[in-house]
Image (cartoon, rainbow, N blue to C red):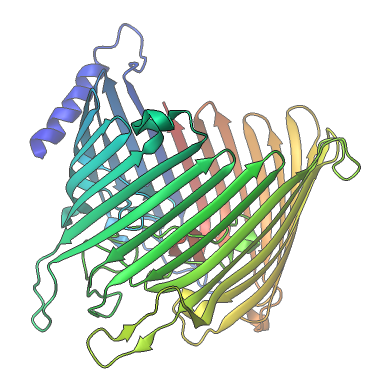
Length: 540
């Protein structure tokens, strides 16, 4: 691997010094850069800890080179030291992600690091999210081959483990058949049918002195996707054999999962429905791993991913050891020019999701419980009902309003047994005024009321933009309804961002409240902090 790393870096250097006359990036090279830094000041009132280094940062530089059928790349990472809220084991700098790839006819071979997904990801998905501090890429060999509507993938690899040697051997195969491409009689059909299947096996040596643990743990999945016009139906079922691990308290029980979605779109109307059932589907290449580490699979969320500040107080985190849920969303645009729609039309959206435990019956053997398939349990984990309306009144004004109810089982989602269930109601107003062609000002007002936890919150934001370069914003979160009068704090923040082309620079100050940051049902805990933040992103 050292030879491979040196060879790939040498190729970049050789290409760079071959540039003609001017200091321009060769057409075959592309990449991106990201830097996030923050100063830290202890604040005992909001719970911000003392940080000895005073300034922490995460930095990433990705370089990609393409020449005909060949491409390679690498990513340099520097955590000096890693930002608070990220896994401290990321401490350090170096190149862990590097690959070379060759394409010939319908064959693609990748050696080194790569990200991959089978189906919806229920038995295999690797990806990177810098904001979550999530990166579980594979390091090994992958082969893809396609012919006449059949698409095949195979891989043998280990998974990233911070800056240490990769861990956990994973072997996988995925096949997909596009029937309309395979058979001439189907080519002209309006209905598209895609059938797929996956198999994954992980190997980890049994070194436990007390338990006899399976060293090879297999998982399989089958899926079907039917598309006709604006209708899209997807269903996938997965099974995993018994996989005793730290996260399931080392029980010997098979796992299973079902994920289905139905979507329909037509002019001005969209409907999405989804269901999910999971039982003992925490699947990792290291059975003793905790947190967001060594995941082989990904369980797709079906609850709405909110972005407004107050709605991020109570995000839902996927429960791989057992959950069942339903989701429905309908959005409709009232026709522009009508009395109700106004000149530019009016957008309406209604969504709801409902997540519960699964029914589990205790047993006396080592399985610990049995679970009848697709039967809900007694505990409600999460329920939301949201309504949104937005309308462009004229060329100057645009308004939006949201009302969202959330039931949040804090005891389960955050692992605090004494916390109970939070019931919250949030109202949001969002107004944008286009002052000139390039200047606009936007204001958000939000209010959240809750029966427990930290009680009621108020939020106000003001944002001024000069397109396409400058954005200045300031906001304040006020926990005025905290049951403890001594903890009714303000959390102010301000930021300035400058954008030119693909480069964005930002600087800001914030008092950050503690809480969960979730993306796609995967969460990390963000501790309270008080300091100045710096950010740079660029691509070329």
